[in-house]
Length: 290
Image 1: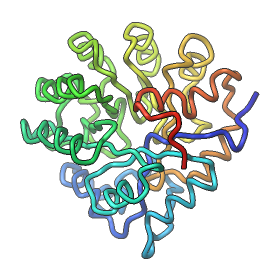
Image 2 (image 1 turned 180 degrees about the horizontal axis):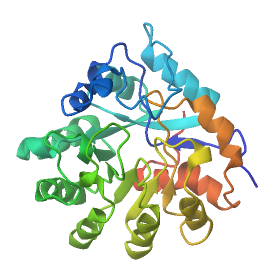
Image 3 (image 1 turned 180 degrees about the vertical axis):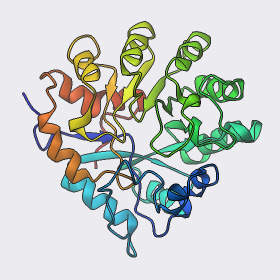
């Protein structure tokens, strides 16, 4: 069976269109090539057909319309800007919040997690190791207070792993670094983002080893889902692969959902991949409907 339009979806990486490119200044400040600093989106060389629809006066409406078109019931969004916080407050049945944390901020970052958890009801924490400045590797001890707080609050953490799209050093996101984290924090629910390339086979081996390690498909068009991930989902990993998009940063939902029917998942995988696994990891009430 292929993907059927109308199947409910939880998108674990979605946002709202924004004017300007200041949101990517944190990436530009550590890039060294002139091309990256000139790009509106510092990974344009990867996402050559990224959505360019302007937000107008209603960026929340733009995203909601796209979600409705493609039966995305709930989207996991950041909570660090005014538009996202407004969306979370106005449409709590459609959006779940995630707190982005910079380990360079030390205990202030830990306090931010607690504050967002208490005030905004966040469902997850996110981290971009290659994008921090200075960079902080996945297994760096600066990350450990964050992991500990996630365990204490029973929150999953979504972490970019593999070669980053922007022209940043890849070393902080080497997939082997996840092994030590899972060893030290076996209760931590750790979800990789952005593909784990070129160490996808290692990511699968680590998921076999660690029961709380998951893989999300964020920032990958379905036709580029790694074969090792599809094979793992079709065999013993149906409960460990989670759908993630990348709208509006690099991929349109139109492209994603046009390509999904070409992914050779088995029948039992589709509902788990599209919504059941995310619902469990994010602890979303199954009765929560738009």
